[in-house]
Amino acid sequence: MSKELNILITGANGFIGSHILKYFSEKKEYNVTGLVRKTSNLFRLSPNRYNLIYASINDPMDKIIRGFDAVIHTAGKMNFWGTYEDYYKSTVEGTVNLLQASVRGGVKRFIYFSSAVVYGFNGNLNSSEEKELRPFHDNYCITKTIAEEKVMSFKDRMEIVIFRPATVFGPFDITITFPLIRGIENGLIAWPKGGKTLTSPCYVKNLVFAVERAIHTEEGAGEAYNISDGNDIPWRDFLSMIAEKVNSKPPRIPVPAMPVYYIITIIEKFYKIFKSQKQPLITSPLIAQVRKDFSFSIEKAKRLLKYDPPYTTKDGIKESAQWYYQFKNSGI
Image 1: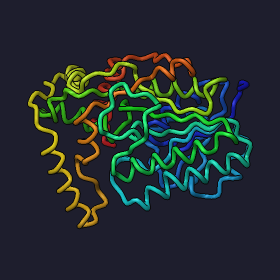
Image 2: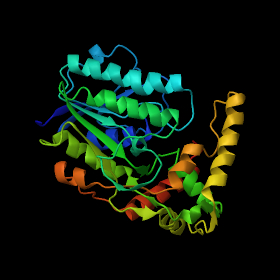
Image 3: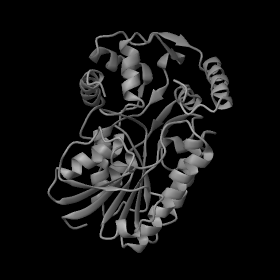
């Protein structure tokens, strides 16, 4: 792709989208526009060289899409709580709407953010992209998988790149990173299976670097890629690194995963009976994810995208801890 690219980033106010927006808007070779809903909270965004368009990905998109060289699609219903209908409308129908408008608008490259959850939680040990997709029985996981299949069906009409990031963390993540650090700081003492299962940490700045590689790749289009820091480690090691940065003790008491899982599913049923819009503090997909290995190979991304993570997991944890204290004291 040539320089001075016109890039549209959906979900630009979100955790991942805001980091992408910041990175590309600081580079003169990109003209960057973020797509956000009118009701979006913009606390993650700071003034920079970018434009904002206020719309939903389910709105008519033809006028919005026209003139962009690349679309980076991060928008969609997040977390592990909500009705199937809500997830399908946002994650699947919204994505298809965006794909169709992108084809009509002459977009050359479409980068879609899927997730490693599409592989399921039955055990992943250095899993490659060739592994069968068997998502966990959760609305987020199921609709992410459906949406990914829809995106790939467009690979003959646009240059498609799909990302399946693993355990993404970093500054401005209030869904996983902030609660996790706060829990450790407040004395979180137990972890399913003692934190012995593997995870693939993915510092958000490494993920942003992968996006730039995907924009410029000449041979990697039409493929899906696992993305992480490239160092699969036990959860207890990951948590110990966090604990060190906040001067706390890491979780140290092992608890059996299955009893915890069944207790959480019972709690979820009560939440659903009372039609709670707020999700439980811990959900069954989160427990399912940590009770077995959840690690992935990034060799394909290294080979085809020339992806070499510029940051270590320790770098990411250091910056996350610094942000945590700033955010905790900000009153936001």
